[in-house]
Every structure is written in structure tokens, then in C-alpha cells.
Image (cartoon, rainbow, N blue to C red; front, top):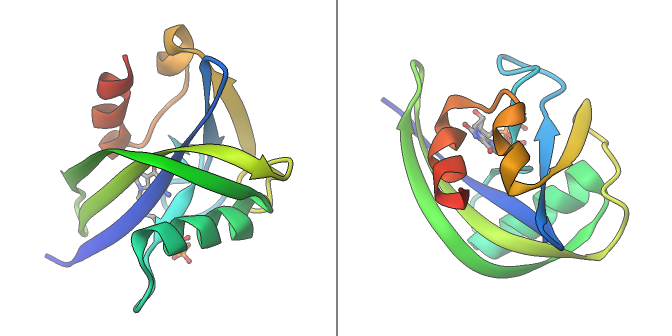
Length: 125
Ligand SMILES: Nc1nc2c([nH]c(=O)n2[C@H]2C[C@H](O)[C@@H](COP(=O)(O)OP(=O)(O)OP(=O)(O)O)O2)c(=O)[nH]1
């Protein structure tokens, strides 16, 4: 099975984290942490900053790696590196997603996460 390697941003502000709802594709309507696939020759940090610029028109600071999760989808294996981040500049404009929410710890289970993300949510609880 092919593996895809993805970086994702857990953007924090005060006691909340930023979640986005996918606006297209197989997983439309599912919630995730913004990010995407690494391109050849990019570091994880470069890839994550680029994805957040492309998806949300925002500059982030990457604080630390929370975890790397592994998950088998039907069509591919996912390796996803998840980083705590903060906004440096920008308004998190939804250029590709159809909705977003700032969630407190108590609200984390209120959205319909992509299955791989449930491992992250457990860590955040
Ligand atoms: N960004 C992101 N992707 C996730 C999460 N959880 C999860 O299973 N995925 C999966 C969904 C996708 O199959 C893959 C990420 O691909 P993507 O489509 O966002 O990446 P991309 O922007 O580089 O790619 P593309 O749409 O140009 O093909 O990882 C998550 O929390 N964030």
C-alpha cells in the first residue's frame, strides 16, 4: 500500500484549538487540522508553513511536535506529523475549507473528525 506523508497544524489561541472542515474530495464534510502533503525537497516545517499560507493566507510559528500518527485508510497508509502552532500574522481566511471552529477541550468531540485524527484528539483530551 502506498504511504502518504502529511504535516498538520494544531493552531492554539488561549485555551482553544483551530479545526477546519474539508470543502472538497472524498472526505468533504469531515473535520481536520489544516495542512497537507510534503513536497519533494521540503522540510516538514517548510511544508507546514506553505500549506497554511496556501489554505488560510496566514503565517504561523511552529512550536513543537505533538505526535506522529500512523493510520491505514482503505486506499493508502497515512503518516501524519502534528505540530502545535500559533498565528504570527493573518486572519485564517478559509480559501479551501468550508467551515472552521475554535474548540475548547470540552468541545473537541462536537465535530466529525477524519478517522485518523481521533488519535490526536485522545492526546489533546
Ligand atoms: N491536512 C490534513 N490531512 C489529514 C488529516 N487527517 C487525515 O486523515 N488527513 C488525510 C486526508 C488526506 O488524504 C491527506 C492530506 O491530503 P491533502 O489533500 O490535505 O493534501 P494536499 O493539500 O497536499 O493535497 P491535494 O489536495 O493537493 O491533493 O491526509 C488532518 O488532520 N489534516
